[in-house]
Amino acid sequence: MPTMDEGYHRRLLIFLSVASFFEGYDFLALAQLLPNLRAHYGLTPEQGGLLVAVVNAGTMIAYLLVRQADRWGRKRVLALTILGYAVTSFLSGFAPNAWVFGFLQMLARVFLIGEWAVSMVIAAEEFPAEKRGSAMGIIQAASTLGAIACAGLVPLLLKLPTGWRSVYFVSAVPLALLAFARRSMRETKRFETQVAADPSGSKLSGFFDILKGPHRKRVLLVALVWALTYMCTQSAVTFWKEFAVGERSMTDGDVGLAITIAAVGSLPLVFLSGKLLDKIGRRRGSLIIFLATSAGTVGAYNLQSKLSLTVALVIAIFGTTAVLQVLNAFTAELFPTENRADAFAWCNNLLGRIGYVLSPYLVGVIADSAGWGKAVSLTAVFPVLALVLILLFFPETKGKELEETALAH
Image 1 (cartoon, rainbow, N blue to C red):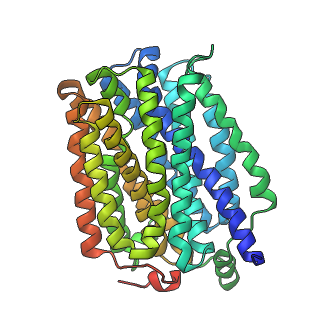
Image 2: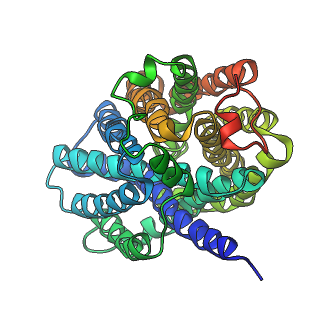
């Protein structure tokens, strides 16, 4: 029989995984709908890349929301992000033009990425050290399930009278998660302990304080690794339909089938990668995962046959999901409780997402003259650079308590 904590951990894992599910759904929705959106709104490839960049800017603005989890509490911020994402994503389905669509989706990304970041902080603080990597891995892997659901649903939803807009009407479903978040979810014990020890909040940092203290070097280093990683992962899947349709003459049905097969094929690898990080460590695991990301990206944009492209896409989807598991673990583990959400927000949302925002626009510009295949293939060098920094500067955090890893140098 599981203990009370084990039972709660199980329910919490399911809840956070369902929340992550919609991160994967939303991410792939834009990737699959981009050609349809460009056709509907009359956008060029460069304008399409700019639209994606505008939407992705929301992932940086999410910084302002994520850092509040160190002040308002993890539970309260998570509930707010779920509500905000559901409402803004649903309204995106009514957008009359590309500007309104981009603005609403930018807001949706603010809440969605806020939800994802806070979920990772909660998982890091609530699960035991020996299972922390696996728990965070499962939560991140759930986003792949969301991508699979999206890949299967989009071709069907496009046939409805409301067309691509139907894909965003489905996003109202997360509102049901609020019932659990408000009634059954507890605040993390580490946050409660921190509040009890410092009820006045005197240890909470101002906007730039974390860059003035002992964590400055670590924040900048982790943020650089995030930015380099995003320079590849944000474009690797986003523009694959553009490439497949425009340069390999695949149909919407072909693309939907290939993405579904690739997402399903990558799923076992994605779920195992969290356990891999707990087994062989974050550093060794990153060696496998980051190299797979680069190799999968190059293959997915250079091979010829549908079969070989699909196999490469399996590796690319696995890599672009699993690298997040590695960086989620490092980012949550390398900072103390009173600064954990703030540090996560700086490393991922504010600084790291610079690569996330720049990548689609730069790829769109290059693709205008060189094609999608060459443009996206060039980004494969960035995960290799990120891997070098991890191996040179990141400590091993496997199996260690957060209080220990936050002090490791």
